[in-house]
Length: 254
Image 1 (tube, rainbow, N blue to C red):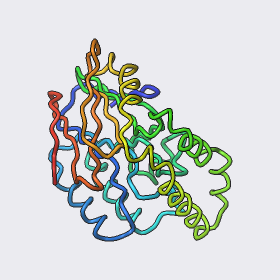
Image 2 (cartoon, rainbow, N blue to C red):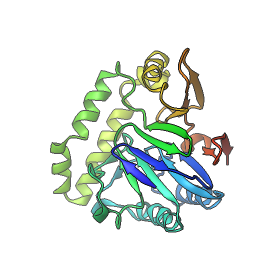
Image 3 (cartoon, one colour):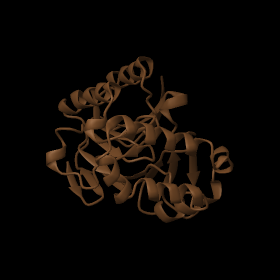
């Protein structure tokens, strides 16, 4: 497996790619066990792509991890140790994820790569694009301002020196605030904005995968060779996608 900036290449793929999005795992055993059972049932996993929002809210500095964070991350580490690549695309519910992912951090995180924006996976002769998707709707100005502020170097620096109990309280307050605002943008799928995004990314890929929107949807654009696929969320649909070594995409419902 080779990496080049925002690109990962697997020359002779064996096994399957699994794409998991928006699991929002909560701090309870039932939520964790459901996710764990799904992971352990995956057949021949070559690469797992987690399209963000793994936990309901995740302060990704290890000193802030809850026992449920450790539980899930330890399971992912076991899978990774069995020669499975795990790629993480940062979502809007992850804070303090490393911006530059180097070898020294891999002892803490069970990921081969972490990406904060668009990235590509060359899978044999196929090429796939990925992004969490929370910044696609450029008309949701309030959210974009909040994202820019909450993920800024300043806020991250403050969090790093904040006691655990206070940091968790601030993060939860922020999440509650955003969940009760901008309801207009949360209720409706931004079809226009997603199609404009699709026009920009679909010419150089076989398929481009987007999370965040919690629906299962395919979008084709005239004169574009690829398809944009909104990945269904694990949280409410208990559904993931599988791509086999020939590039055949299948929806798997648990």
